[in-house]
Image 1 (cartoon, rainbow, N blue to C red):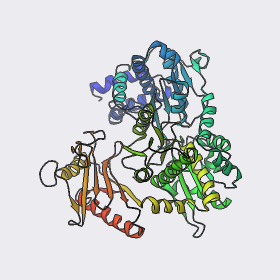
Image 2 (cartoon, rainbow, N blue to C red; image 1 turned 45 degrees about the vertical axis):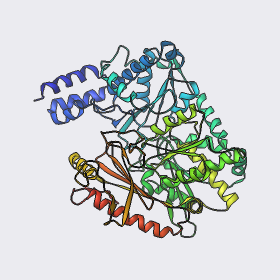
Image 3 (tube, one colour; image 1 turned 90 degrees about the vertical axis):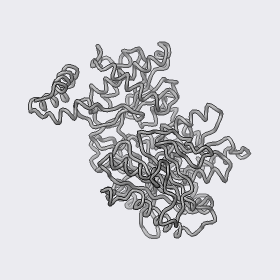
Length: 604
């Protein structure tokens, strides 16, 4: 028999939900007496955070469905009404975009309807859009915020609700917590919530299509005419995969605008398909397993460069073929970040030959490569490290711009790149345009490949070698024990390890963003935001190795990100690689103790 709390929640769901499919799911489970499943679906609520919502499309308060979306839109609209005036709501309004997943359009329309009934002007796209278009549109129309309905590269059964604020960046604290509270205070569906029949005829509903045209125009403006001239004279063709997502039309239009040759699309993955039939995970980060069809297409057409967006086109993958060996290399996000960072400096200097870079900034997340820091030290601009996620880099960039600074580039190792400040979020379309233009330039002017350019970068700025992986740990107390052991290494609080391999490699600095320790700072306190609810410790070694150990916010994982940051005069790359491998192996064994703690390694 169902508990009284569960019985009440089942009845509440059936009273509120007007979707036949999800009502039928709950009714069937109720009739079957599957209380365990009903507990999972109804007594835990999908939490709203800085990433908005993301979860499996299914019935219940713990899923992505019509009722949960309606409740979220009611909470968000109420919160925004408290933050902005009635006049702002009618003039500024809000943007909604959606990808090609099941229910994405439905969720956007439901939300638009709720906001209109709350007195907001609503810009609702009539077509599938790339995620970067939503933050771009917010700034184009001076909107109060925006929502992109997407689960990015998640499995096909998932969907998400990504929220941006009026600066065009993703929301950060305290907005997330305040929105969650307001959602919980506005759970009862309002009158007219489900009535979307005349949505497209409402005077407050606008089509933001002009923003797409402007996006292409503004992207073109980030490419100097000299580079466009090189593009127009190049015969370079690239293979492109949209990974069954929305990217292809935007890649097509932007490549044409900067005079690049049209991409050779992987036909099976070119158009949006919510079933993602050719890939297990629609995520180009998965490497060659996700790029099998792209590699096949490139081999059959004689192409040596592959670009691939994830399904919502905010990330970008790169692969190249070594014409001597015939082998394909899939680049890491850190390697692409090094290439695009160099390109951003090159373009700025080309367009501002007399200007100093002293007012310029680049940003990267704390678990990403420090190669931009090496660029900054040599060229005299500023480098800022942020917490993981583009919500931090986007908001930091906004603050810099308000203070008259120039932000050239930002990236994170998870193949996310922000080239210019047209979009204050990762943008796989603009990144593709710039990587393709860079390929044309390198071929025409320097007669080298991406791999050769990367080697030249390392020779000039110092070799940066990265290793990142993770272990599964399904017991939260064990995770806490591991990190607390590192904080109490000598049996006393805040006594951390000082070396590995019996003193062979000594630790120079420690930063603990769980408790606010940073021994590199004069006062010993961290500059980056501190969160006691997550685990994150960074060790910087005297020989240049930096490694961050952290927990995942969404999965039962302990992740590690290691990088050897060498000096330009350290040219023996093989020795540096071997040293890094030796150190990372020792750190994993000594600090994580995977055997003693029953940790499960990442599958190869």
